[in-house]
Amino acid sequence: MDWESILLKCGENVHRQIIPLLKGASQKGPNLGVGAGGDPIKHVDLVAEKAIIDTLISHNVSFTLISEESGIRQYGENPKQNYVTVDPIDGTTNLTRGIPFYATSIAVSSKPTLNSVHAALVTDLLRKITYTAEKGKGAHRNGEKIFPSDETSLEEAVIGLDLNTYKVREIAPKITDLISRTKHIRHLGANALELCYVADGTTDAFIDIRGKLRVTDTAAAWLIIKEAGGKITRPDGEELSSKLDPKERVNFVASGNMKLHKIILELIKA
Ligand code: IPD
Ligand code: CA
Image 1 (tube, helix red, strand yellow):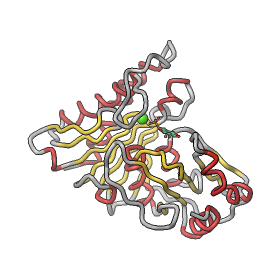
Image 2 (image 1 turned 45 degrees about the vertical axis):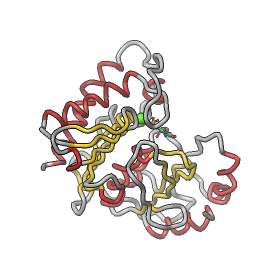
Image 3 (image 1 turned 90 degrees about the vertical axis):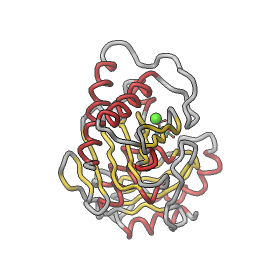
Image 4 (image 1 turned 60 degrees about the vertical axis):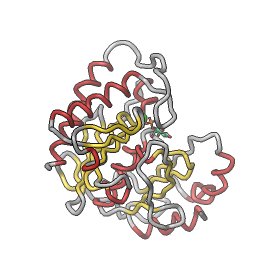
């Protein structure tokens, strides 16, 4: 199966369906219930999810969908052949407020586990920048091979850090040393895309140790970082592993290179 071209078609279809909705009225709209991942569902989330499902069906793919919105659903005659883990819109709040940073994230695996993901796509829906990866074939941005940064100085590094949690008092002590030695800290509000920024060297690291980020938001970017040559591990340095399920949460540190990764792990004292 040519997963890269199928995923590109999924991304294009989401883009085609979403862009007209961005014109005119605000997308804040009502909440349409609660998604399988536990967050309120917005109209755009459902439109994006449908665009992905329709595209897969039109390519005669049998698959088990693992989605932040609809949860786990089976399609086709042999749904256990492929597992497709999606966050239809990563950065829904950004999108509905008009903050220009949101993406679609799709990961394909042979089993419902993170380490069996073999094809991935994350598309920045507004700028139409598409990150793809296939196991053993590297990672690409709009078709061009990408590599992470070799920056090792905290003084120079740009480090993404998600502190978007009510439990900030628990998390803050772990990252105080790192923040006090880092000049450029960012959080842009769509973690799948922020991980791709580490993969292509736009930023140098991204840290999410809140215990809150769903694996549906992480699965595609996990492969993209690894294939680009970056590092992504648990905060204690062990391999990141997870069941693929809309309710699973992950903690991780992702860095452009091993030297910076070790410096960060040391400072966050997991
Ligand atoms: C959200 C974004 C955000 C992160 C939240 C996620 P969503 O994804 O990745 O940056 O702070 O925890 O839920 O909900 O827009 O798919
Ligand atoms: Ca989402």
